[in-house]
Length: 111
Length: 114
Image (cartoon, rainbow over all chains, first blue to last red):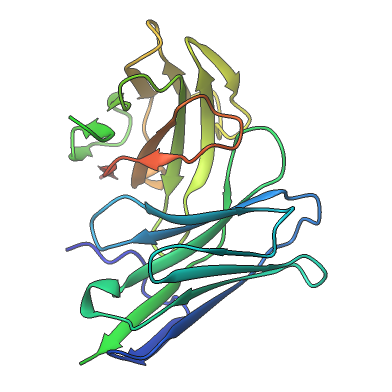
């Protein structure tokens, strides 16, 4: 399949361990944040979102943490599985409708 | 179908040619977005439709790019006089009403300009 990126930041995690993917955003006015997962040859898949009036949100096996003081967002994946291997993007919404995406992090699960 | 669909999945064209890329959003979604993704990069916003009108086209790189959504459902992205630098994956997304709701992406059209 198509490689989404050849020189992305990479995180390698043992299967069954927890993963933490970090993202720094630039605009202090951003008020809505989303994490997407993108597998090779596919479009981005929604994972979880968080609004700026929250600092933590949990989903199934995933948790997003938002630190507005340092403009930092993280995605925690519990008990990573081989199917979690993908490129993960954070995206921010400043105002209006468009999303601004980060560079992405490639997560590789080691069996 | 349940998700956003895009056609064609792959398009190879020659420099200077005209191409059209189609997006079928999720049924009932009024907001539709086009993004472009180059290799190794995150998607970059091109244009946003609310209903039939282009509410924000600030991401279109130049006047060779144009998009329409005449009936408020299917959208077509049109690229005139294609250049090699236009080669990328063109992604379409839709959301129920916009306004900071989840954007669901299609699989993309991979455009290669030779």
